[in-house]
Each structure stands twice: as C-alpha cells, then as structure tokens.
Amino acid sequence: MAAKIIKSITELPVDDIQMGTRLRPVSKAGVEAIKASITELGVMKDAIHVRKHKRSGKIELLAGAHRLTVAQELDWSTIKVVCWDCNDDFARLMEIDDNLAGAELTALDTAVFLAERKRVYEKLHPETKATVGADLVSKRWDTADTMSTVSFARATAEKFGISDRHVRRMVSAGSVLTGGDAHRLRSSGRPVTLNDLTELAKIGDVSERYRVIDLLAEGKVKSAKDARKTWASEQNRGVTPPMNNTEKTWQRLQDAWKRASKAGRVTFLEEHGDEVQALLDEIREGQA
Image (cartoon, rainbow, N blue to C red; front, side, top):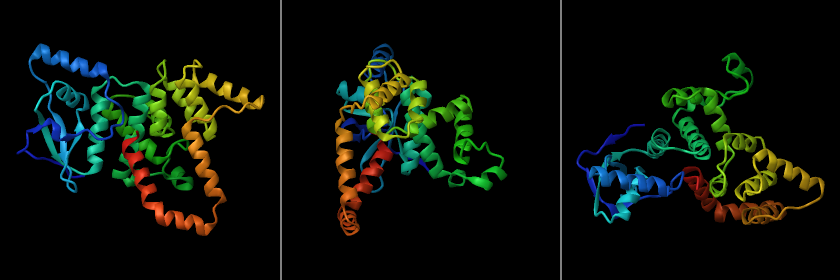
C-alpha cells in the first residue's frame, strides 16, 4: 500500500475539494468547537488531508470533514492541505483512523468504523482471512473467532490502546449494520449503547432486526433487549408490525426474484448486474 505526499500541493481552493460519502455525518457541535478554536487562536490548527484521484483527477477529502465544513461555512476561498498520492484502501483507512483517534465517537459510530476497518484490513492483509476447521485448531486460535478477527483485534487494540475483547465486540456489532441501519439508529432520542449493538448482532432474522432498529430509532423501548421482547410478543399475538419503506422494497424485490425463472434472472443480471455491483461497492465504501 504505497502512499506518498505530494509536496508541491499545500493549499487548495475550498470549492475544489469533494467531501464525498463519509462513514458518519459531520456534527454541529464538532464544527462549532473548531470555529471557537479559530476565534481564539486566529488560525485553523491542522491542515486537512486530501488526495488527487488518479482516474478522475478530482480532489477528494481523506481526513478533516469538520475542518472542511468550517472553511465552507466561513466562506474561505482556500484551505491548507496535505495532499496524498494513494490508493482507495489507504484513503479509507486514513478516514477511519482519523476519526477513531481524534473524535469523541458514540458506541454506534465506533462499531461502524471498526467493522469497516476490519474489512479494509483483511483486504490489505489477505493472509489474515478466516481459517476454519482443523486449520484453525492447528493454529491454536480461539475457535470462537476467525483468524482474521483475532489478528485484526490485536493489531487494532495495540494501535488505539483498547482491549482485544472490546474491539471484537465492536466489530461483531458493526458488521451486522448496513449504512441505512446506522442512519436510522443515529436518529434515536437516546444514545445506542454497546449492549444494544451486541444484542443486534445476535439477531439472524432480517425482519426482526428491522423491527428492533425501528423501535430503538423511534424511542419506543429502553434497550435492544426490550425491543426483542416486543417483537416476540407481537409474533405470539399474531401482530404484523408495519413495514418501513426499506422492508417494503426488499419484500417486493425478493418476491419478484423468487417468481422469476432462471432465464429471467439471467436476463436481469445481464442488464442490471453492473448497477447492482456498483451499489454494493458504494455501500461497502460509504456505509451511508
């Protein structure tokens, strides 16, 4: 993963920098804190990190979304930058590590970031991907974990000064969430806790997970465990909870796919396969 700083670029027009899709939204409190610091110090303390995309030639933000937002809101024409020549994986890790190391993250955001960091880590270190069965036992790894989670947890725990167990719990929780799930949970009136996320990670039924997330987001329960009890009670009473738009769309697509013949499915994939792959790549990269 070779990456180098382009030393000739140290300042860029604010309007030329593309924010792109971030793993978490910019917080108003974070923006106001930076504005207060600028008022007190007279300068923005740190430069933002960007890269010049090799294929498009566009300038993309790597780290410093709050700082760039401040520059936009203050109508700055230019901003100090560190410009990198790097690949997509380096760019993603820089965003993740900048947030993990420098921001006050909620349990939800930490879980989302660590799950994404594990995905990129495995891509960069394919030798750490899951080893199972006799191979796993022969390597004396804990059979409750994949090899990748063990090695990733150790490396991440050492980097950020937290325990292996804490990393594993966060990764497990974040791995079951899609970008839409995280967005819904952020709208909750009460902070989503690690215990809530751990409970969500146990849910295998898609419909139950959607319902639990809805109940948490709407503030109708105190915890994910209570939400699961509500779900179980609804099922016992034969109550069908209202589907949200995501569930409705998923249900229609699933029904159409099941009814389609093999030839129909092949035709669909020939015509729309690239769109589906592009959407999956966007979800994996953006988580939003």
